[in-house]
Length: 66
Image (cartoon, rainbow, N blue to C red):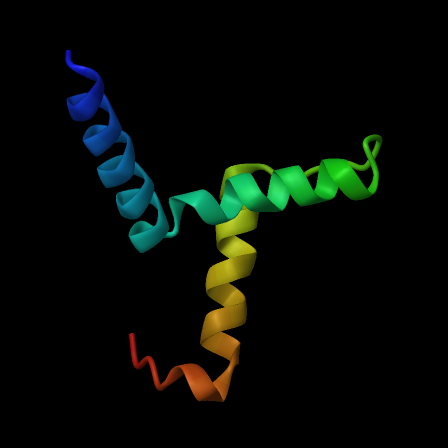
């Protein structure tokens, strides 16, 4: 694979992870480890559950009926 193609693939991957929210968990883990390396970090499932619950509880995020 050429270097230009690798760079383009890396950019696409970065944009995809940002658009889907996948990178959010990675940033959370990096921040938690930086602040306190001994702190217990939520699993991805726990993190996503809290994230969804927080969005649904916030009236500014819109109404969700189901």
